[in-house]
Image (cartoon, rainbow, N blue to C red; front, side, top):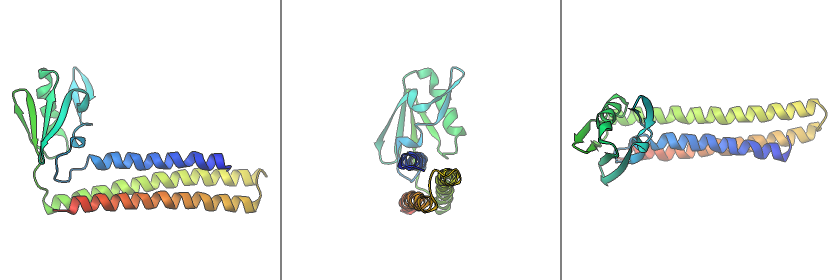
Amino acid sequence: MSDESLHAIEPRMARAIEAMERDFSAVRTGRASTSLVERLQVEYYGALTPLNQLASLSVPEAHTIVIQPWDRGVLGAIEKAIQKSDLGLMPNVDGTVVRLNIPQLTEERRKDLVRHIHKRMEEARVEIRNHRREAAEDVRRRERDGEIGADEARRQMERVQALTDRWVDEVDRLGKVKEQEIMEV
């Protein structure tokens, strides 16, 4: 694995972290955030469309999200999508807007969310390890083909492992931050 190949797996590992962070932003922490609902799929004229493409989202108060659709005809579909989602929120349709009141989380719900966070962290770790495995296979193949010697293969494997360890530590750090955010009352 040349330095080019080593640098090629780093962005893929970084994308695993970015995807995990995006998923973390959709986890409810007791405070209102538009990221909770912006990727919610709403059936709009027969096609599933993300909510942020159908309406403006705002947070006027710490525990309220306001969804103002650009087309009034989609209010009912937005309401249904929110009710069907696993957010556990009840939408209040107020003529032209949908209001979502974010209640404080119960201890049981907090623990469920932490379990969800840990599951997502493990998925990110597995993805990073899969990239490590691909890189290791490339190094072994190149050593077997005689492109590199045993010493160089060992050095490259150590660099791949160091890179993997760095990204796995980042997963753990971000997970710990999100867990603290969830458990904060």
